Image (cartoon, rainbow, N blue to C red; front, side, top):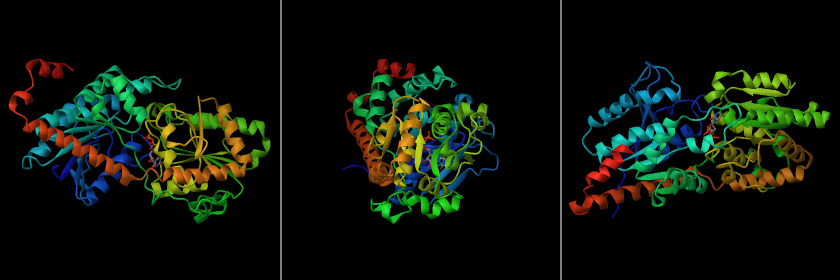
Amino acid sequence: MSRRINRVATVSVHTSPLDQPGTGDAGGMNVYIVEVAKRLAVRGIEVDIFTRATSRALPPVTELAPGVLVRNVVAGPFEELDKTELPRHLCGFTSGVLRAEASYDPGHYDLLHTHYWLSGQAGWAAKQRWGVPLVHSMHTMAKVKNAALAADDKPEPEERVLGEEQVARSADRLVANTAKETRELIDLYGAAPSRVTAVSPGVDLSMFRPESPLLARGTGLLAHRTGPARRRLGLPRDAYVLLFVGRIQPLKAPDVLLRAAARMLADDPSLWERLVVAVVGGPSGSGRRKPEGLQRLAAELGLSGVVRFEPPSPQPVLADWYRAADVTVVPSHNESFGLVAVESQACGTPVVASAVGGLCTAVDDGESGVLISGHDPADYARVLRRLDAEPGLHARLARGAVRHAQGFGWDATVDRLVEVYTGAMDQLSAAAARPPAQTARSASTLAAEVSA
Ligand code: UDP
C-alpha cells in the first residue's frame, strides 16, 4: 500500500507566493503554487514553500493559509534580483533550506516539488540529503523560449540551458503543463518518457465565472455589456473592449494588440467612438528595461485616448475585467500554458490568441476563441473586427468559452499531482526495499550523475 503523504517541501527560489502576480517575476507560476498548496492542505497534506527573502522586514516564516507556510530563506541581498543574478546565491539558498529541515526530526518532508530550474537545482541537492523524491515543474524552458523570441528580446543564457538539462535528468518526476511540453522535455531535454506526466494547470472556477446567469447557462448575447462589471470599471455599454492581461514584456507581445487596434481604427474610423483597449499588468523581464515602452508605443500609434493602462490587480478585480471585456487577446510568442486565457473563458469572454505552446490547449480554436498563426497585427485586426461585426459568432464563442474552461479546475490538477507524488514515493520505497546489490549505484553511474 502507498505511504501517506504528510508534508511537501515546495521550492520557488526566484519569486514569492506572497507577491502580486502580473508584474516582475510574479505570474502564473505564483498562482499555481498558491492554489495547489491551499488545496493540498485542505486534503491534509501540509506544504512549506521555500522562497528567497527579498526584504529584511519579512519574518522567517509566514502562514499563507491553514497548513501552508512560506519560509523566507536569507540568501544574498535583501532586494529583488534579476533571475540572471540568482545562480550565484543558490548555494546560500540551498544551505538555508537544508538548515530549516535539519531543525526537525528526520523524515519531516515526504517529497520535494520544485518550480523553475533554479529551484530544481536546490531540490537536486536536498533530495539526495533527505532521501525523498524530487518532482519538478519547469514552467518555461530556455530551449523553447529561445526558439520563439520576439525581435527585441534577449536569448536565455547557456547556463540556464545546462541547469535545466541537469534538473531534467535528476528529477524523479517531471510535471509538464501539456502533452506538447511533455514532448519537449523528452525530445529537447532527454527526459525519460516514463518520468514525465502532463498535468493541466487550473483556474479558480468559483472566482472566475460569468456575471450573467444567462451566459453561465449558455444562452446570453453580449449580456456582459449591461452587467455590473462594466459599471464598476467605468466602461460604456456600447464600447468594444479588448483586454490584455499579464506581465508586460516582449514575450507576451502586447504591442501586437496595440498595432492591431491601430489598424482596426484605420480600417473603420467609426470605431474611434467605442474602441477601448485595456492593458492590465506591470513591467517584467526585459520589459523592465523600458517600462514606459508600451505607453510610448500607444502614443506613437495615436492610441492614447483608446488604451487604458491598469496596474497589476488582484484576481477579484481581474475577474471584473474579463467579464467586462468583449475579447481577451493573448498574442504571446510563447506560453507554457496561459492561465489568463482560461480565466477569461471561465468568465465567458472568448480569447483571440497566438497558436503557440500551451495556448493551443488553453483555447479550443473555433469553439471558445480563435488561434492565429504568427504575430501579424493585420491578422489580429481582421479577427477582432469580425467578432465585433458578428454578435452571433461572439455569443457562440462565449458559450464555448464557459464550457471549455470547466475542464480546468484546480481540484483536478491537485488530484493528478497527488497521483504523481504517490507514484514517485512508491518507486523510491520499492527501490529502497530491493537487495543492496540492485540499489547500489556503480561508481561510473555516480560519476555520470555528478558530471551531468
Ligand atoms: N495576474 C494577476 N493580476 C494581474 C495580471 C495577472 O493576478 O494584474 C495573474 C493572472 O490571473 C494569471 C497569472 O497572473 O493567473 C498569469 O498567468 P499566465 O499563465 O497567463 O502567464 P505567466 O505569468 O505564467 O507567464
